[in-house]
Length: 394
Image (cartoon, rainbow, N blue to C red; front, side, top):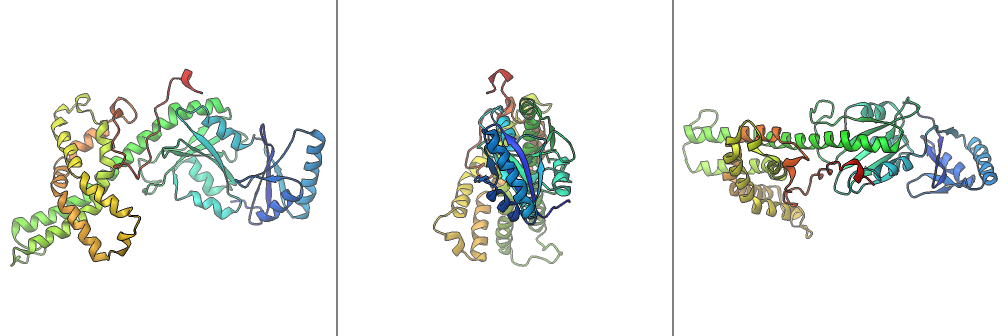
């Protein structure tokens, strides 16, 4: 991607005046030029100069050109307004309570920090891969939803919006649950409307599908181990066919299974409650699934003590988990796995019911009226609110 050693991008803001952002391998040289020209530095790394007095503004601009030349920095005047303003104007018109914060990636390597969090495989993914993105606006709703807003490279106007996540994810290029980026118009009102009525509903569906896939993947891992254990019980032989001479060894196999199963089943306990609240079997072609869904909800409820114990250990402020050896952690997981073994077997028995009902559920609609336990969803972002009618927008 193009990478000038020192570059200063200028844009205008209705509240801040002239805004300058330094970037490039030698961005510090650009920063020196800005400081020497009389610009003030903001906490986010951008620089500003007042435009309230025309003569003073001309003097500052002239000084910047001279200082930039002395420091080997290139000055570029943007054709767009300050991105921080644009993000703030959009946030003010989104449903719920949103904020916008400008982030500056002055050094080219800082831009790479976006990759682990970017939950996207479309145009914004390619833009960050192929172009220098020295700054972006991050929109947040305060309950875990974060969106990345950048200027659309190679276009005189327009913006790109993508989703961010701190959740462990599959390769975004191959994961069908990945939300796609969105091209936004230059008008903040139209952009906010497009986000509210198109992007956020798609984002809610992506969150829903991601959680469904997480539960199904966990159950598939458990099923393989469970089938091996069941085969040993039924045949009285090891998996390689050698007879199991001491039946008491089965208890050891069950503990080993429980240890491995808990590593996956806690994914079910994290994501399933929210998914189950959206399932409405009576509204699907399979109303008879209601009984199985009741069993699944009971299985989750009966596992709550084990789930609380696991969370208490992981978040213990006194450091007890750090003092446990690998063997002791294995014993803890085995005990938890044995405690929830009936719940695991219920989920294995009704996986197909869960999948078809969860796939049929509509996130953010009438099927999501009741909220799961906050403890169950401690590690996942909350769904953004459904759009309000246009008249209710701020």
